[in-house]
Length: 134
View 1 (cartoon, helix red, strand yellow):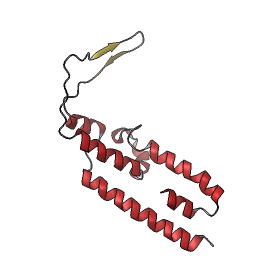
View 2 (cartoon, rainbow, N blue to C red):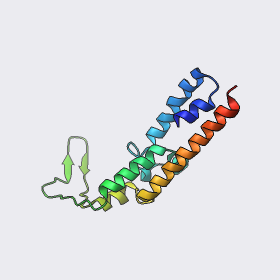
View 3 (cartoon, one colour):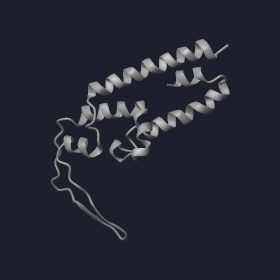
């Protein structure tokens, strides 16, 4: 993506300005800060453009599938002066996959989307270097 942005910008100072903004948006919608199930519908198109999301979801699916968790000895109610919070016990990785909204794609699908991103970004970078840079 950095190669594509810098190839599409006419000057170095413009690419140095634009690239951090583009990378920050992809990082915010990568799935670590905002789970895909919690992204508002009007921002879901930005979520779909984040290549970091597909990497994170693929790794999460790999690590959580078949994982068994124990909830013994876990206190489910946390009380402090302001809030009475209740924590839900998650028994296996599949529950967490469904809760976080990672169940819309498979690991192979994540790999395919990432390969498509690489081809698309390289293609746009080639077009930018070939036709925009003089």
